[in-house]
Length: 258
Image (cartoon, rainbow, N blue to C red; front, side):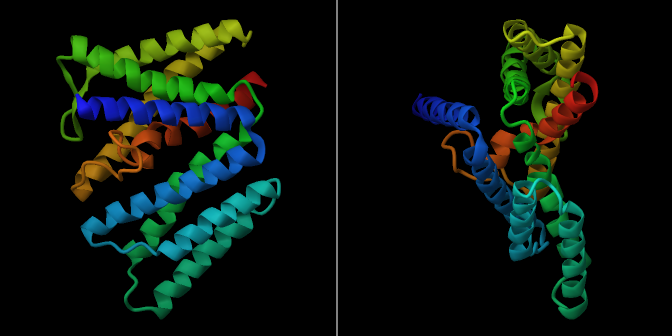
């Protein structure tokens, strides 16, 4: 009961903070995403160290900072930043015999996986569509948990996440779609069939993001990425589905809804 109370309280505080930051938007949202990306990248690198790969933390942090500055400068220098990162990592690989190809590959993967994908939240700032990210990701997670506990029998991916079921997965898709329909009706988001299609696709994507993070944890032999949120784990434990979902939502909206 104590653990459940801790989980509920920390989750409530996190939700209130999330609503406040997203509602304010602007520099507060951009800086918050930057900090979350730094923490998430550190958690990822720490996990990978368990399998004897040594990410280059400094380059990772510089990469996050470079991507953040690029967004603040209206996304004009993305190619330059990526070029500098790749060349710097390869120079380190050449000049330092203690750095392996796996080390620089994981360093770059971490930057692409966490900050690069997560920064798409900033592109949705001051838009009604930004809330779709959290409705779909958290709605899928919540309803998948409920449906899995009530009806779950057939395992979804037993080797990666033994507790997840096919029934839970379907429940997550249906639940998040219902929530998104309600939100879309209230804020007059149309056409509805495109909203429903977006919800179904992104609910599946959210679950794939969760499974990807779970597989990394299983390979690294850890239960959680961190303990920043009591009862919930680390940043990646809470944002794994969002990391996959937000870029899909952004590009879907840009191509099909705007």
